Length: 71
Image (cartoon, rainbow, N blue to C red; front, side, top):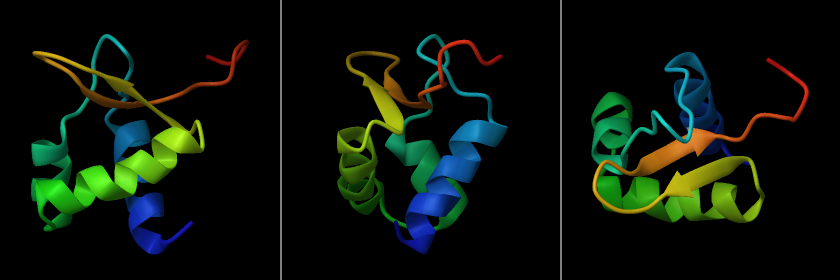
């Protein structure tokens, strides 16, 4: 995991993202000062690692996957 991955995870956690309230790559890129395309490439690795979930479609984006049983 690289520094950008850690910053993305920090953002998703602190903005309290969820399936119902995801954050899109444009917003993440703006906050981290990187292009949305680069953010998406990095997020694909986090999705494969099952640390981040993705909600597709209009109003979609990325969110932290929370452990079951934790609030």
